[in-house]
Length: 354
Image 1 (cartoon, rainbow, N blue to C red):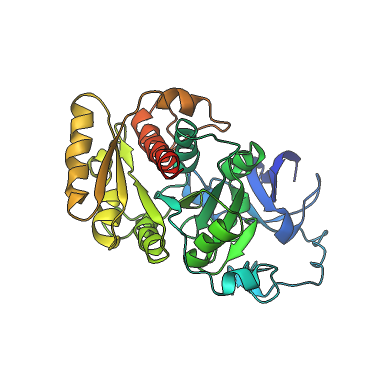
Image 2 (cartoon, helix red, strand yellow):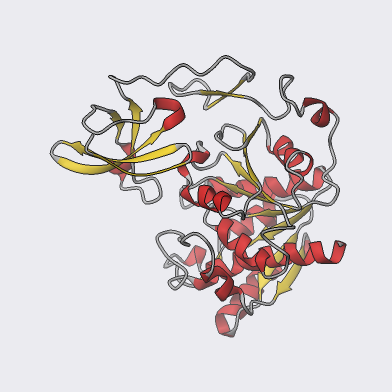
C-alpha cells in the first residue's frame, strides 16, 4: 500500500501498487481495519478487471500484518452478507436486545408517511434537493434513507450518504435485507420503513438501492425493479408511496431515453398498489415524450405533474456532487430534475397534511 487518499465514516480510500501500477482501493474499517502506508494488503480486483464505473475500486479483503480487533462483546445477532467471508454481525433495530424491540414488536402502521422510491442511488441527493424547495428542510423536516440490497451491500461505500448525513440532509440511515452499515439495521424493507417512522421519527423516507446496480439489458433483469416492491411495502404498511421516474435526455440507449423502461416495468408491472407517480413538467418535445410515456401508468397509479421551476438551482446547491452513469447535472439535467420533482411533491404533501 502506498498512501491513504481519503476517508469517510466506515471506509478508507487507498492508493495501492499492483504489478507495478497504482490503483484505487477501498477498505471497510469495521471489517478489515485501516491499513497503514507500507503494509501489504490482500485485494479483490474484480471491479477493476471488469472496468466498473461506480464500483471501480480494488477492495481490501485483509491486512495480513494488522488484523482488525475483535468486535466488543455485546448485543446483536443479525448476520448480513451471510455466509460470505466478510459477513457482518449487527444489532437489528427490532431484535430482542434492541432498545426499540418493544416499540417495533407490534408496529405495523406508517400513518401516511410519504415514501419516495427510486431505482438508482444517484437519485437520493436529487430527491432531497427537490424537497428543500417545498419544505422547511433541513431543520424541521426529518428524512430517513432506507438502503436496499440491490447494489452495494455496505452503506459505507456511499460517499453521498455520508456527506448528506454530515450536512444534516438526512436524519438517519437504515440498511435493509443483506445491506449493512446504516445507523439502524433491519431484516426487511418493511421493518426498515417502520423504523424510519417510529424510531427515527422521519417525516419522509427515501428508498433506493445502494451505489451500483445490476442490469442485463432485459426488462426484468435489473436490480432497481425492486422499487416497485417498495411501493407495495409502503402501501401494506399504511404509507404514501411516491414514485420517482428515471428520466434521461442524454442516455444513448433507446430503452432509457425519456422514461426508462425500468421505471415503466417497476411501476407498471411490479407495483401492484397505487402510488403518486411524479412527472416533471419539462418543456418541449422531450417533455411531451416523457408525459406520454408516463401516462401509461395512469391505469394503476395517480400520475402527478410537478412544475420544475427552481429545481436546477436547488440541485446545483446540493452538498454533494451529482452523477449518474458518469453524467453530471449539466450532462443529463432531466434525470436529476425528475428525481427532484418527486422530492418537491413529497414536501408539498407535508405542507398539505400540516
